[in-house]
Picture 1: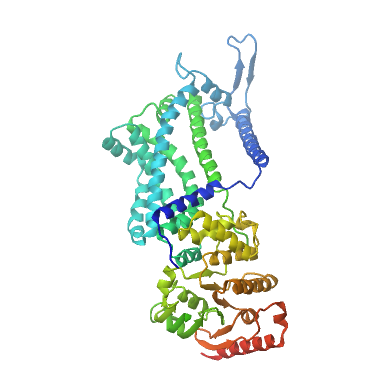
Picture 2 (picture 1 turned 135 degrees about the vertical axis):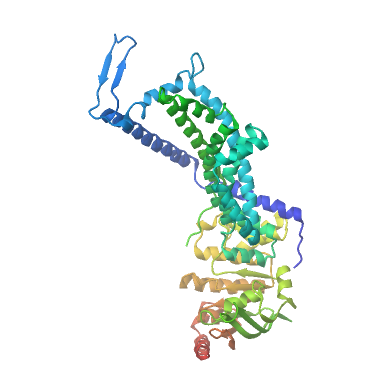
Length: 322
Length: 257
């Protein structure tokens, strides 16, 4: 049987395969998806609400004395002395939630903009570097994973070095990167990429090797090229593994960017903000807590974005029955 | 001309002294349009032999010719389709996209692919399921999709490795009848590996009985039941005679060491 082996046709068809995973109609009707989404948000709010209540309950039982009063004490003056004294629940270690949230809306410095604005700007600085690092790390990870999946020789030779690279603390590498690239945005991005590429490499490798061996036999029976097998079988099978790694990489990139800012001498990012409020923790602990919560929210949003992308890309992949 | 010629084929796995002789001295010729069943006890090498015909495994000795060419050339020319015991469908593709897979690899145009896929799904009686996904189909339906995919590029030879082994008896008998119907339409040569004696007798023109490891061909039994065969064929006295003949050949082959 003669066949046309136009490389162009193969590449176009390969792209169609990835588009297939993206493009077919969603089986679940829209109103049901919305209800599911609302349920997830409600569940989160309930759990968060309970956590907040527990926080204040602990302080109620064993924290520092509670005091509410107007400026001169004229309108009201409430005090509550908790029955126990737990060091962990003191105002220094566990500031009141209203103090933490209050710190966000109050100016960070005298006559300055509210803390939340300052942090938002800092977040933009950090997140752009984190995102760049994430994309670079993902690209490198996908490339290495693909190479290792096809060459057992390269895998055996290089994976030990890949693993070893992750055991070196980033604080040791950061100054080297800063000196090499000069302090700045790129060194932060590169440090984030350095932390990201490892999970993506390992999971890509695993995912590319995950298809049923008979699927590979099937492709051999069609005399399919390695490239065609890669695009049509291996990558689609690897998507769940790759997305697991991307979720890990997303949070790692944010952490890496924040840590990387310090030796890079970047003050404008979240790392700088954390160091700043770190210094004044004993005096204004709620401000550092505010920064921490803000940073956590940023990280969570990044994670949720990846999860949404994953859901869209894998909506047609379901387990075969039986 | 023979579609498949197997001469003096051996297959040994592993290295001495821990080697397994899977196949020993296999000699077989299969003519155009035949339906050959390979039957034997577990581990007798019938699946290995099937894969050797398909150049998915290389024999240790001997020659295999498919359509007059070496098996490797026949594979590169896409002279055969293959169906496994599991459907091996891609869950991220719809039914019609699964059937179109070999056609995509061969670079056929979108219109041609769609036309052939519809034709094949019609043949396996799954018209209307084009846009469904594998998870929405039963095991028997998935296997029919797998058969449609194997035939989508009209190969002359079809290799089937216990395709109905994972299905219940009722579905299996129905699919046997459907397979014969497809065979009569497409006139493909079929090599079929099975564990089931009635299935082998019902489907084949010849039944090749193999021994336990090391696998050898102990007997080739021609099946002279009239075509077209249907549910009534299973109730003919001649059917029972042939089933007994195959069963005795198998029992005898187990005695050979």
